[in-house]
Image 1 (cartoon, rainbow, N blue to C red):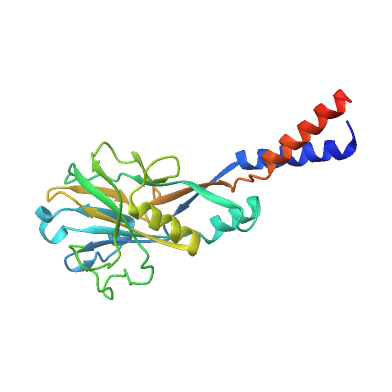
Image 2: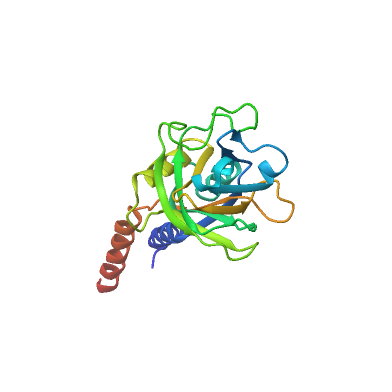
Length: 240
């Protein structure tokens, strides 16, 4: 086999190998809020815990807001695959239960918003439970049933999966990840009795909400005809 043919085959094989690689980076939220009727929960518990509670919980009714900074993660993707050389295959969020006597089974919905600027700090935020009207572009990602098991129990919820069908919110989420470095997720109560209780970003023992993004190399379609042509040349050479 001549050297040029070896080089062609090597290039094609390298391209195909790169396509098969994947990289997953997990990023813990840098801020969160438990938004009650009176605004984001204040005090040390306001950041150490992350609760989603339905209307039956009165003044403790709440939805959650979590914000993530993907600057370092996207830098890792660019380093591995090159700028513009990667695509998103899977996005999921992991929550760690931090249960109390009032933790109660019920529905929770995860939503995406492109609003990364509305304040979520106690005493200065315009937000209040219920979520209606607080974010203009809320889009659905996934709904699930919170079931209290034990403190420390990990829950993983898939927000986007390139291999399957995805709701509008998932596509909005992917566009957001590709477009800038900040991601804001909302966790809303779907049942009046639900009290979903999780660790927050300043929890001393357990991580807050954590976003995991899996990417792989953008396919290189040119590698396949290149490889086919190289093999054809090899056959012709042997016949000759």
